[in-house]
Length: 143
Image 1: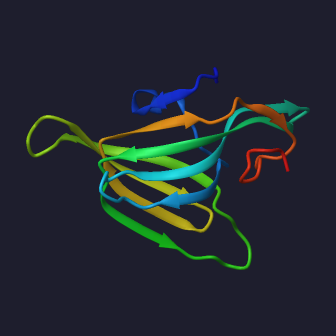
Image 2: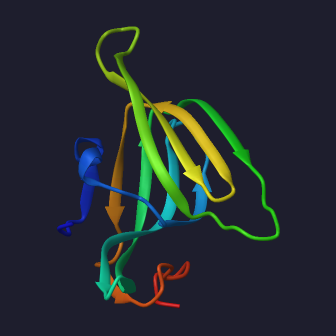
């Protein structure tokens, strides 16, 4: 995947969030946005059928005009907030016919979140670095 600073819902089919770690989540307030601080994996480096590292960057993933938010999380003794998959389906026009709505589902190791939104923006806070860990840590440094 090529690197750039801003990604949007127009890039959805080119993106994949598998194993991206979520550090924090802010719930919708007056602006109806939900934000996630994540480590996004831009590239997997393989050597003889084994991963030897990743190009990872700290990013902010923000979904816009969120409604119908449902959160189901359970922390067992093992597991973390790694993303398995983000799906979107059921595109439709809003009741006023002016904007497109999508149903999103974020599947995590510890549960899932689902909601309706008009789209997303993912902003890269620091350029990707090669790391032997998928997680850079909350400060965006290799751990």
